[in-house]
Image 1 (cartoon, rainbow, N blue to C red):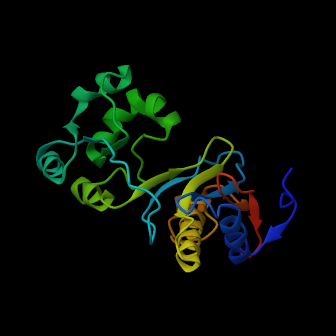
Image 2: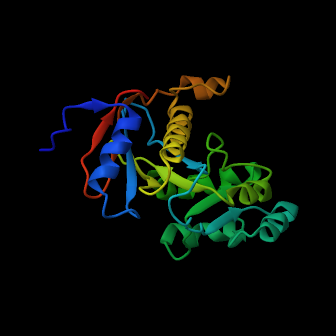
Image 3: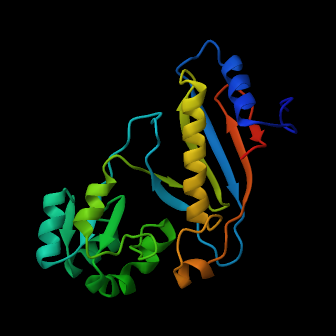
Length: 225
């Protein structure tokens, strides 16, 4: 058990302690853990983010778009990996066609949802108006993906992400941490950004704990966020 397990610190103090522990590993990484409650009817927290200063290279999504006509042409030009209509459904359902991100136009989402809802839904990949992945502007969505990274909680509502390198100036670490937490608050209903009735009726995934850690260092609960 770490001496810090039952102690809370300010973010600035936690950064200092972890940097001291990792003094011989300046390229080590701070990890941020955010625990959220998962009330009945809530969904696993998920979103995309671009940090002020990235701690690692961004992985490239493999994007599949359900679209036809001009929207399909625009999606191809924007860089989608796979584009098509109902003919793709069986391949996706069987696992023969795979992607890390699925988009759909509103006209096709009903066509695909009956067959793919149970396949993609549990994996958090089903196109959704709430997440912005059902849209008439699929090309615009793909272009906005550039420079962003997906974050996602587990089934217990715990979100873990590398947040900064140990050698970053403390102010850069603080900026990354605060930016990420604000994004999570909006996505989990802790900070309203919409007057949409459906958005406001969803259960709030209340943030219960925020912890900063490193590979060799302790997990330190943050008191001032």
